[in-house]
Image (cartoon, rainbow, N blue to C red; front, side, top):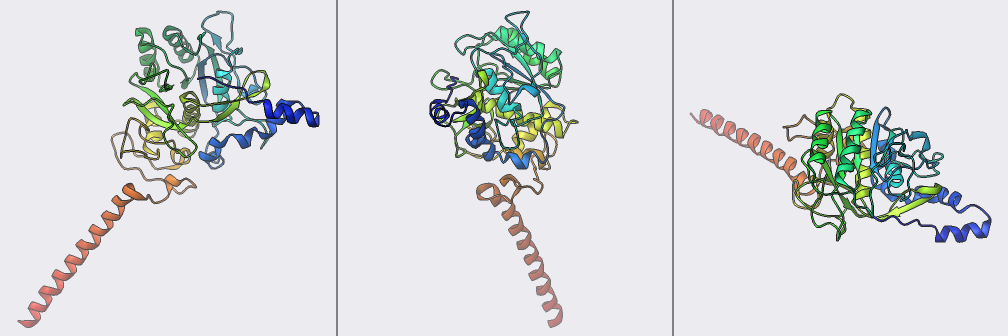
Length: 364
């Protein structure tokens, strides 16, 4: 996914009023982060902010941006034994880390991540031209598991690899959630690796209206969708970036996993993923489909709904500001209405029968 630094307009403003352009950006970036309002992030943060969670970002490295540095741990560079993962010449990894855990510079200033108190474990995978080497990804995943990550974000795609498959299996055995990008058209035609592997949460992208984004690859492996169009985040050199693609969606879902793991520490990795997919807003054909997966991420519902364990189909959202916590409309809501109609009809039938026999007895 390409990342473009949006600075032309701000540079012009800075030259007029004599302020550094990146300072002006930090003042306006929160307004640009439309996905936070879409996710109802203020309500979500009343329930969880990601305390105690370590998220590994296997990417191009993560630079200590002012909006992120307090949450950035020392990591590794799989291509250089002396590296700590805290250098980024591409901006992609820094952008992903910001979407997950940026803390901003104040209540309304600077970029904000989905889980602003989660810790980022940066792992530089040495990718070239946006294409990740599958064995390098495997190295990064294994290192993340060894160093205490409970979530691994892989906002990239690679080719099939036995080592990558083994690393994903190792993550599952260690109760680690692996979130990966489904892939971007036209470069990718199908859900790519590691997103195509069983046990990985493959993420698709939606637009500002919550509809499937044209850039997002479709396929039966897609598990969930999240905002992925015109997504603003942190970048290198203290700047900010705007990007479109399933990479951004992946980082947003990784942040959502961090919120859920922090609020429900007793849940296994599989149950955490189940909570996200069971509370997602169903779009497209009913149930899981190749565009949206189980639906579009509903952050507040994921944190507040009563979700029965895996194997049960009933989900009862608790009271919240989320649309998913309100009585459902349309095809989904029709089921509960139908149940009440059936109950009333049965009661009416019993009443009519009782009156009938009472009249017969009276006539006798």
